[in-house]
Length: 92
Image (cartoon, rainbow, N blue to C red; front, side, top):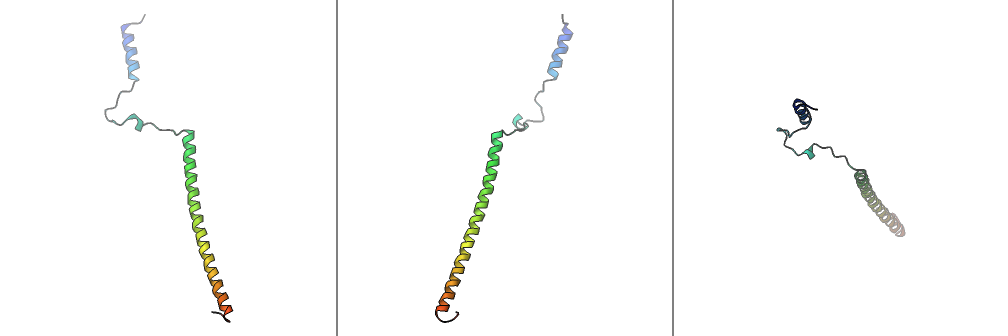
């Protein structure tokens, strides 16, 4: 049989372990929780990062391709100019 003192002590012991609301901190508990991303979220983030890197590489390669085409066009014009000069009996 338990005594009333024991019951009171047991009730205080249990209640002392329960955290009550803090008066100084009014932020929701979600702000304090560390959110651990799921495996799917990690894979999605990795995919998006790699996709972004590849898009940048493609953009850079397209710029290089355009520059090479411009260089090729300039060289064709120079060749045509030289040919015209030769066909006219001299260099232009």
